Image 1 (tube, one colour):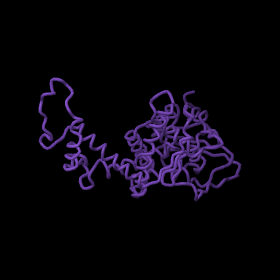
Image 2 (tube, rainbow, N blue to C red):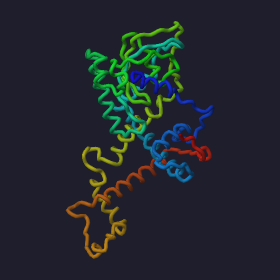
Image 3 (spheres, rainbow, N blue to C red):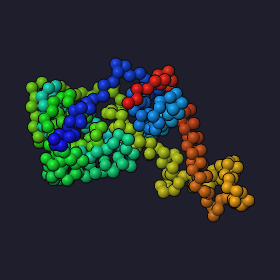
Image 4 (cartoon, rainbow, N blue to C red):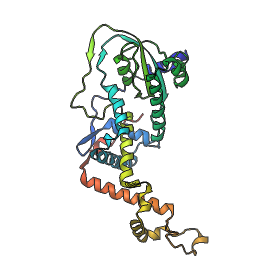
Length: 336
């Protein structure tokens, strides 16, 4: 029946079973990156069908640059910005569920807004705003079943007000399970993310054997908890903020492109590289092109200068932060 479409998919998928060992493949300023994380990002960003040493090498270089920028954002305390704290709070709500039965079963209804694991940052923002608006409506007294029927992307359960089948611990994905088992009867969760997208869950009923297991956050566990997809969302927010401050925009003019605004640096860059921009089309070879025109350079020059600024910044980060890559651990990848 369509009614059980989502829950069936969730039950079949289960949690990812990692190998007995998940070796560290690199260390960025003391922060370790495990092989499973590297494989997740490689699989998401690698467009080819083959996995070879060349593609791994190219991706490794880019991944190190990415992690360096994220580390710079952390050091700049950009994770304290309201938009990032809001996302971190959402994931912490999932991870800090106080009580969860070892056994028993729950009966829940949910509202799902689907988000693919390869969704772009702007797509995540749109879905996040939608799920937040739905949650605010629920907080103001809106009927859960009505909103599930109107808004949920799980059409199989939406027709029944979002109601899913009873399930027990270990039958669904971890993020969904933790929230479902932590709720009190009638309670509605905050929005949270699973590998299917964003959910809001309402506990309709619960049966348990009274054997409760307290979930205590390990003080040694790093703050970047949750799935790699969740971590990626936060890191992309940090990346956007740090790049705005260092590459894309001037701090005092939010709408001004930093490369275009740096007239002196841009002129020096063009003077050094102007041979690169010679016209290749025969009919234009004899044309005299004086730059800048009306004080502006072509977009290709601006893009190249911005890329140059970014490379200079990354070079500075590599001097600031110690990077260790264990290439022997990256000779083979477990890509599905």
